Length: 219
Ligand SMILES: [Zn+2]
Image 1: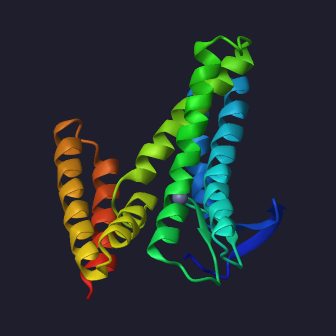
Image 2: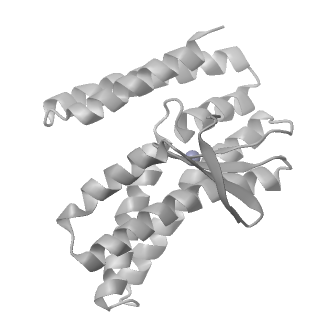
């Protein structure tokens, strides 16, 4: 997906090479600004949970890619979070659906685990509760945001691949996914205009709308 000369190989995770792109500086700036409201202990926990959750999301894509026999799998940490790509392998609609869906599924599983650890009072120390709370909210947010059926989000790719898998008609699937993205985008902009207005979310939705039209609009 995102390929640039500004990335560096930092380590391997379960045999998958992990790169950090220079643009990841923006991700650190966003996280740094967000944690200003927290205590020193919460700052450390939040940063570790946020970076760990992004990495585990990408690892979900990577493990599913490996399971469906893709090769040359790589994870890159970028400004928007991360991307997972592969260089070789035949991506059928069913495989693409499974690969796209597995990232958000990891986040929902982590959120559910954190919720259970809090609900059943398994972790009761200050640091344990902080870890669970941040794990719950960060992963619920990442899971929901990435599931939105717009491009280049996982939700958009999973929707397109899923409908193509079901109908066997690629062009029809692009049209359905495009109208879905336009509808969600318009509703989202209307929502964030009346509730706020939240110009950051409106800007994000405009970028996603533009991207969806670029990817799905061409024949
Ligand atoms: Zn993803």
